[in-house]
Length: 64
Image (cartoon, rainbow, N blue to C red; front, side, top):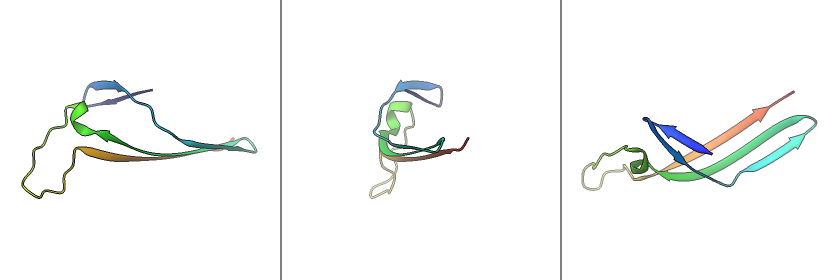
């Protein structure tokens, strides 16, 4: 799919675990994106904790 942030639209894909039980659907995923790909630039300071890679964690629960 496409991820749009700050007016920048980029295609992404990631692995996910999807379960369907009794009509309910749940999904979980964890992946990383590079924030600079979406124009989020901050050089930071030496030994700063801000990294280019940002971990995304998704959890979805849909019940009928």
